[in-house]
Length: 277
Image 1 (cartoon, rainbow, N blue to C red):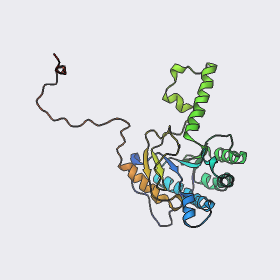
Image 2 (cartoon, helix red, strand yellow):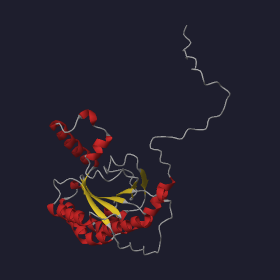
Image 3 (cartoon, rainbow, N blue to C red):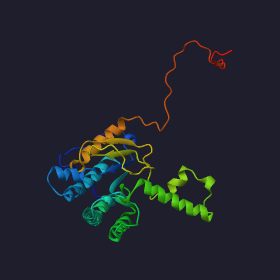
């Protein structure tokens, strides 16, 4: 068995809650929101919030390993983030590239498998290179999968999947009548990564922001009124407790208890008329 470096304990000495293994979410999606507002509240440039957010993400990753979570998807840069100022976009591109380069050895030592989800067009080649290097060096790790979503959008992922499916239909490799939900799953960016169980968004905002739309169809959503730079693994653990308290029915339901009225239900009911003769 591969020996990985255990996660460092939280500075407070806090330990994760003891939840039954079946109630711990396998896949947690996180919208890392609130960096800009955190910096603004302190009279700092927006970039300072992003810098603080890096340490938060890695504290959360360690907390996820402690909790027994198997996959964390982190929304690092969306397809809509290109609308920000050119200065911030350039800074974010360089920052994402450097974070991956700076942290990949640490992640690898902890047994984290890095995966990238997103579009290649427009994304800096240097960012793609760092992502691909991190993927390759960590491909055999099995402690936790960290899906970095960079230049990612849920609608973009579905559009790209439909385009590839269309190509296969046109070439005869795929029959339209055989397309189902499992078929669509195979055309997503990382089809081997399962559905989201817990969709977690700090910052007080209550929307999905185009993140993992297909994968989150039956996720439990937890919104927390704390900005991402003030977040840490204890907030993740609290979200897991909320998740564990929910009743996940996936569209089904337990029948309500029926009171015996003595009525004979073995016969078809008499037809109902509107009283017209």
